[in-house]
Length: 105
Image (cartoon, rainbow, N blue to C red; front, side, top):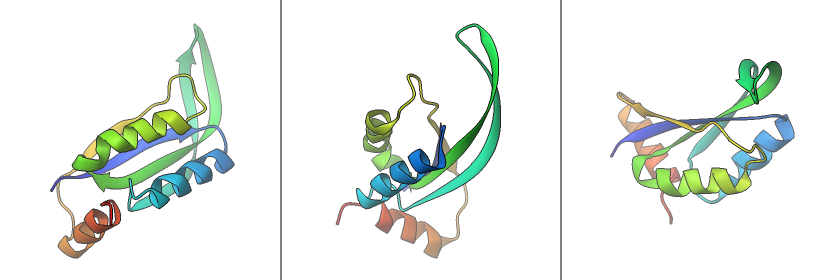
C-alpha cells in the first residue's frame, strides 16, 4: 500500500489545529504536523508575503480522495494548495502504523 505525505497551508495556527484534529479524528490521516512558514506568492495579480502554517498529513493513497474532499470542505481559502507526495521508503512498522491510523475501524 502506498503511503502519502499530503500538504496544505492555512493562515492561522488555530485553523491548522482544527483541520488537523478533524482529519485525524475521521481517520483520514494517521498523523498531522504543523509548521510555521513564510510564503511568497502571487495572488490576484499582486505579489504577497504572509506567515502561514503548513499542515502535513500522513495517510495512504486509498484514503486520498476522501482526505482531499474533507480538506476542501474545511478549508477557508478560495483555492487551497493540496499536494500529495508518495513516500518511496518507510520503516515497515511505522508504515503499518500509518496504514492502521488512516483506515476506518
